[in-house]
Length: 182
Image (tube, rainbow, N blue to C red; front, side, top):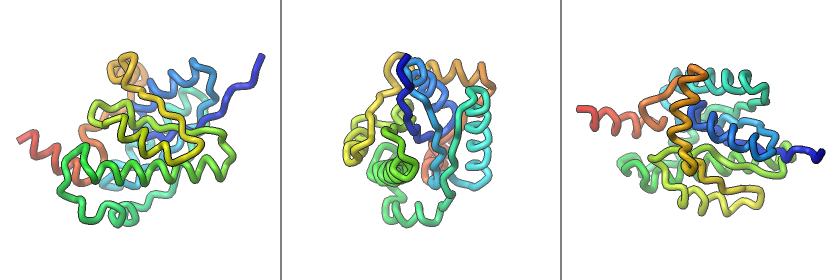
């Protein structure tokens, strides 16, 4: 029997990680989750999402690594893009930030490959994520939206009792989600 391929999986949240990680494990990968989300605001929301990502890691008996939370650094990265719409230039900067941190983590801990769960969301344009990821030698592009990924996310969230958030994560997406609800 051949050894499993190790992969670091940038994990934006447990609902996106559930079907993404499941798919990777079914394809023979040894998954390590990487919770790197300095974009999430407020800190209480970050802590809640981390709690459920850890819960998922415990269910699967996989390792989860937590990146340092530095929202102030993330704010500097997106400065000037605060009024950009969802799917716009601010999101691209956010993807760059997360994928760079994931690439650094993959190098630091000698993972042969990494990917991200960000492509599961119908609110994210996978091609933009792939273009950013292509800058990194170890990045593997998976479009987790395919094969009913988002529907599977809803099903697994219910099965595992995972918290499903109502906005992407940053204060700007929170603001925009509140505007839409009015």
